[in-house]
Length: 310
Ligand SMILES: Nc1ncnc2c1ncn2[C@@H]1O[C@H](COP(=O)(O)OP(=O)(O)O)[C@@H](O)[C@H]1O
Ligand SMILES: [Mg+2]
Image (cartoon, rainbow, N blue to C red; front, side, top):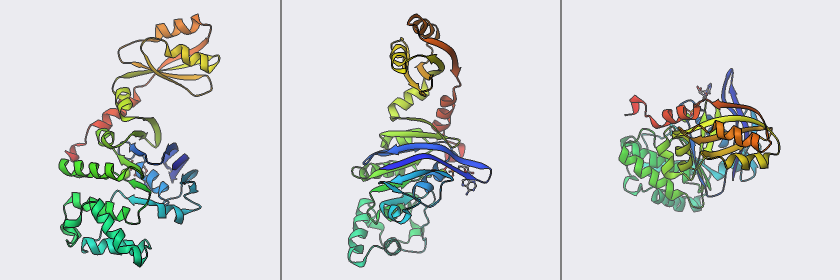
């Protein structure tokens, strides 16, 4: 449903996003996780056709977001990092205004409005001036404006940021309920935040995708694993199955050019067994070296709230 392929975005000298590739299936809720300044907002603005990529492509339901930006925006509901709410307006009037801007025709306007109000549980504040709402309610009004044209794709940029714990739980529940038929990307800089709602998580750091997995696997991987890089000559299928059979090996991937990345349980040094098994089976082991603990460092960043947020 959403295909991000080799997207790079440069602002002058800064490369905010570098060769980012990931796909989201229809009906999936994908967590887009990364520390501050990782490139989440930039990527989301490219997906929603608000910002052109420097290179690479994004397709939503098969449409190139750059070439078919109007068709794409009709399908996408976008909750930006800072929702541009009009604080002097009543909730209902604001949503009516948004629906007009989005070109929802008069016949459907009231039913769409009621539907969005119901989905986001804001019926009790429809006559309230937005400026008087709590942060949690403001965020729901933001979600309602993203939903009002009934899009099948939702892009939510840090929707729980700045909310108190009770509001966070409510907004999380709301996002889960919005899933089903809709395809959703929800960003966060806090791992537990996305593991509750998302079936799959993509981690971005310094503009690059560094991991992609289910929340359970990621947590296990990030918390306690050690990675090795190996260069081996021989048929990849044979080598992969040889490596997998070594005790202590959790997972192995190949770059298709003779390079292999092996994750093992923490505290278990598999190097000796790995080398003996590979050489014993006749594969040409050319190189073996540990890979830095960068994922672990990222994990720490993602699970530690900054002091200002406590
Ligand atoms: N319009 C811009 N001009 C220059 N630099 C930008 C602009 N937008 C974002 N950046 C830079 O790109 C990087 C990624 O930013 P952003 O996508 O907002 O990250 P995140 O949302 O993950 O915090 C940051 O270093 C940020 O300073
Ligand atoms: Mg951001």
